[in-house]
Image (cartoon, rainbow, N blue to C red; front, side):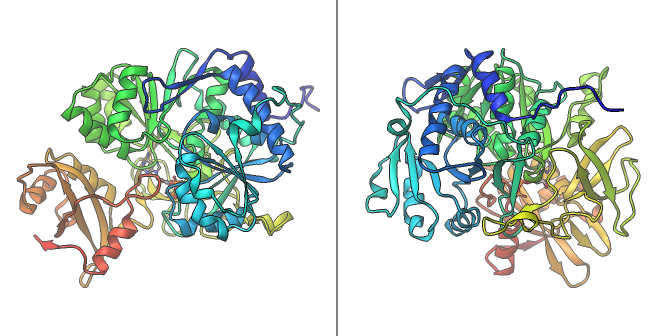
Length: 551
Ligand code: ADP
């Protein structure tokens, strides 16, 4: 029997049209660091997105062309987010914190012809241009000296001049919902960047999931502070999801330090925020030193790395509820969210909150044991997590020089023969479908045939009142193969020594798992998206740069 339903493609232009009309009064507020933030309604964003699309078309951008953005979170970036895919081109968000070498590699791989850049990042972009032969146009927006572009062999345009005066509507094409909409390269925590190409359909469905109460569940009564960068997996889908339901956005632009973040929360009173644990650690230190009113924040989505339970507790005390989410660039990124099941008291709900969370209906999961067998969901059996679903990648982008099937690259270590994504994350799943991650496969410490979770040790250490941050990595050991090395950042004025820290760990950690190698460091090295960069710690250890004490 044939279905009798209409087959309407799921397109980003629909999200744009809907948001800018039905929710035309909702706002994108961009922090400027001056007395007044910039405020722009969704209706204005809709008109300006149409103007941007006209301008880009005149620059020669057509269907399927990857168009770069090198921008902070701000209203113009939202315009690009909506305009570029809606006109049939591909939004390519460039991570402005990547090492220059990687940026060059990525722009060339995607063959960007146009890059829209914030004025403040021109000192980063301009010196790279001679090595970016495909780039013909740079469109600049926002404050910042334009001088670095003087003499560059590209055409330079001012965003406002280029777009103003153009028609405020655009006849958005009826695209195939499976067409490419956005391109994002993984941040390369584990090797070369790999490009993930989202489709209109995957973005649309993912946005609906973000809006479900079990995920972020925001409405037009909410304002979300989008700290997670728009160059980090589509800011976790928020710019699209908000346009679907009229959620107001508060955009920090380049003001991502704890001080300004505290100030914008206090004055703009967002009800929700999204950021990685590092940001919340920094903000906690800030408000501990200079108390600020964070009480408008009813919920916070925290992900990208494991949320230390001690951090969750500290924010509970401030009346801010952190809700952990787990995902990946390859998953658009939303996988699990850690809301406890219904009917539980706060105390009963706690063990659920510290897990990575439950899978939504569209994301299927399975655990694969070391021998390749599928493991049961018993909350104990530990294996590598594999996932599949309509917003999960099936391949990586082969690059602009490829076409047809060649565009789809499926390295064995990432995609199973039967079409699942291998996440590289290790953990267990409970009978109720709650995921607990114990590590990344490559960060697990393999000691004498047993596995030690680096994340468990870090969380236990970070519960110590004098520890600001802790990162644990595997180091070679003659007897056991590998052993944990604990690197610790102490709070100011801390007096605890290694023996005391080890004794503290021994209260919750099995004896054979306790690290015997310790080092105090000034700061945990972070990746471009704020995660612990363990490969840097491992290298520092190997190069003898750490002052290691055996305890
Ligand atoms: P990269 O792989 O370049 O760091 P991603 O942002 O895609 O870029 O990282 C995804 C990975 O981040 C996941 O595979 C997982 O290891 C880690 N991660 C994300 N969220 C969580 C979380 N809530 N708890 C533990 N790990 C997480």
